[in-house]
Length: 330
Image (cartoon, rainbow, N blue to C red; front, side):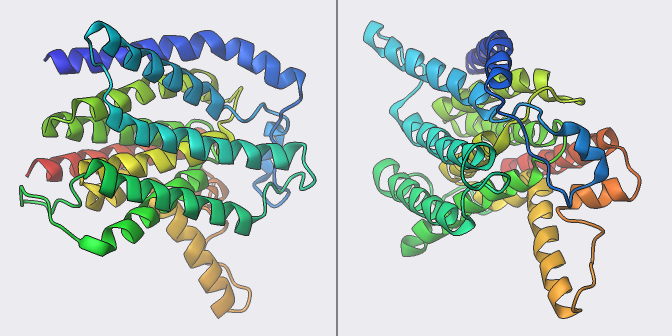
């Protein structure tokens, strides 16, 4: 009960900090014209979003970073709110956030305006970050390598852990990035994922991991205050790459990464839709499997409103995440 109360308190604190500094951040982004550039090939309904402030992931990352540092300082007075293990997911959040910020800036003000960083360059950096994080998880933290549903002891996978863990971090990061195309969608999906893994961490007795998850949840709700339709702010790659990578790291820290595709079923579906669209296009020499990929654009072009897509996708995400947590309890 005490642990739940602390986690909720941290969530409320990060929510208040995020909402309070949201308005100054919005003014700053508007002043420097850090606005979203909309793809010409995207749905016509998105043209109105042109110029909306982006790089809003900063709104999430900074409060979480500040709270984590301040709460770690409480060890000086005999309290330990966050343990040292949180350094690794915090590094993922900040590191991938910086990568996303560079990508966003390059796409807005850089030489590759409207495009962002070169895909190969960004992917290489992601791989390096992910491998370093995977090595840290295995050899510095000694996290449980993987839990099989119904079996209460972790299974050792040896040398395969680092490449699998790196793949999970990169995959989750890009999956959430693909989902960040509609107002509130990536934020709601991320909230669901962090609550799910926070609950799993509490059940495992990993209190510091749970507290960190709920701190991010509060910051995400604060961001969603400005991101719900019609959005006044987008998270950009600054937020989506950071959140996805951190979800991947947290899933690895709990050892329940086999449940990750269930808990983030919408981002996984978005990635699969893109892969299938490309393969089908090449195999049929120009035909399309979906009206547009990622998947959320397909449903928009079928006539669903943006709000309908977001709410229905979130319902699916929530139900799937509940199933994932239930399996973790087995």
